[in-house]
Amino acid sequence: MKLKLLIFKKETKDYTKTQYKIVIIDLDRTKQYPQNFVCILPKNIKLKVKPSSTFEKMFGKESIEIAKQLLKKALRSRPDSETTQAIRERLKLLDPQPHNKTKCENCGKPIKQSKGRFRPYKFCFECYSKRL
Figure (cartoon, rainbow, N blue to C red):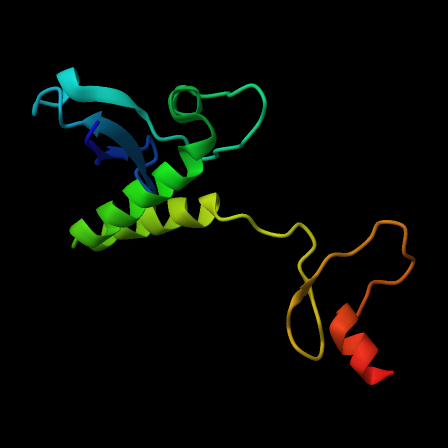
């Protein structure tokens, strides 16, 4: 399968914001769009036991890696600033982010906060052990 992304620009009803539909096509089938359609790239890809989208059903555990590869390849080939912004937003959605965004005051590394603590941590374990 030779996969590629097609990006469609869609105007909303209030004309203030444009939406982008990112479609995955297979170049081995044909070169015309409707015949080589594979699936739509979802905004959120979650690795669960039961896949929620057709993209996750088709590619399984490798779906996040394939999506990142396709988006990076499309980012290199698109000179248009509007589509590159949409692609970068999708790449940010695919990267895992820590839930608690507390950073160490000394080194700036993200710290995972426990829910049982009364006060939040200010330093990571490494900086705290150096301080003692």
